[in-house]
Amino acid sequence: MERKDLTEESVLRLAICDDDKSDRERVSALVRDYLNEKKLRNELKVFDHPDSLIEECEKFRPHIYILDIVMPMVTGIQAARELRWNQPDAQIIFATSESSYALESFDVNPINYILKPIEKEKLFSTLDLAVSRVDISNEKSICIKVKGGMQTLRLDEILYIEYRNHVVSYHISDGELVSTPTLRIGFAEYLEGNHPGNDFVRCHESIAVNIAAIDKLTKTDITLRGGEQIPVAKSRYSELMDRYMEYRF
Image (cartoon, rainbow, N blue to C red):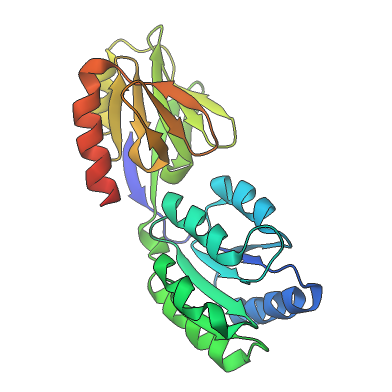
């Protein structure tokens, strides 16, 4: 397996969330203008409620979020706190008509706080700054051997790796399972040869978890983003906790 950087294949992922239709359409139109002007390959998703934003973005994982603050049930700030937990490097921009939330919003470390009506120049300069902080050219992917050939996976799509009956399976955030052919080596040797860095850590004799996919860790199990739970072996807990704390803090 080889590790590579994404260059020409790189896609900038963005998400907009605003419950007001006219504001949502204006912001999305301005963002599309910006992306076209800068000739950036992109995938843009637009949401009208923070619940759908949070659910979808567990898998989509945007590099940049543009969020209204005053929305029903869940505010943009509350949504940003949840998004920030799973994506500490995401760039968050607040676009709102309420200036009174400015101080409260800064605990999620937004890149800017823009008051409505949104001015093109202000949004474009903020997007310039956000894009400059997103290193999509260095986004990690891995190429694994599967039955019949090779397959490239984006690292942040992988939840965990499982070894069973001499086959290694990659569990992907969209529910897909990508498996190797039958191996002649054990799990430890496979991990050493194919994942020598700090991206994965063994939590069980037959499971290695993507450290960035952990939402909650206890002495007995891990809750992954998306809600799936996997076991933690007693002998693995100490190293796992150390690595998790290093990643988070």
